[in-house]
Length: 276
Ligand code: ATR
Image 1: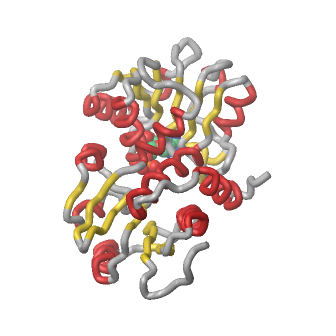
Image 2 (image 1 turned 180 degrees about the vertical axis):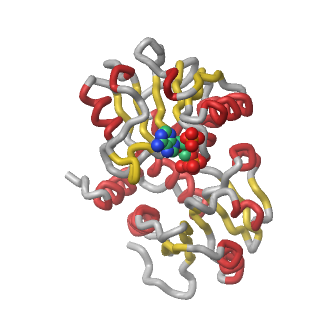
């Protein structure tokens, strides 16, 4: 049982352009389960500098950072972990006695979500996308020993990402066709969520039985890509798995405890209206 809120209770929070409803549900459910004297709130923030000053002034223990603040927030911190610095984005901040350190847990979330269903070493991976999320996934894949080819609507951005992380260049989306061979395809673009709902960047003829398909899009719960992948017998990984695993990493940094996976899963599926 979680103790009642008191002046000993530690506060953690999320900041995003508009308040994120998922993070509080996950973290608070795990505090409850473990009986931790913490509470987690969500804030929609436009004054980022002011919000970080508030974290220091109010001694907020940990912060989950979502778009559009993941890059800009780096300049307000005392230290940025080398991996987050390499990826160029911070989505997790830990306050140790007033010193704020930024981390990135997005890459860990993506890799753990994949590793639940497949090995990564030596696997041929098609990574579609070259934005912020794709950078985190690219970093994780490289660390895991996968062989990655990057494709993106803007082929130039695909080339920049491939060069920066030492990956192969696939090219523009038009170069993805049914002859492209692979073990794993990852959609790391925003296609599939509003305003690009019910669209997929991966042509249906590229989806082959037994191959692994991951979508980082988590809303809707089943994207068009996941639906099509399942219909041809692929191993389909939904975006919410990545969210759960990145939240686990944050939770551990904030509290020093491992959150029960089952509790996070239940809170997430309840929030998405998918509980059985
Ligand atoms: P995020 O941080 O979510 O990755 P981002 O940095 O804006 O957001 O990157 C968005 C990614 O989705 C990019 O790879 C983008 O392709 P471009 O680099 O060509 O812009 C991709 N994307 C967004 N809308 C798209 C669309 N309608 N079709 C194809 N790709 C799209």
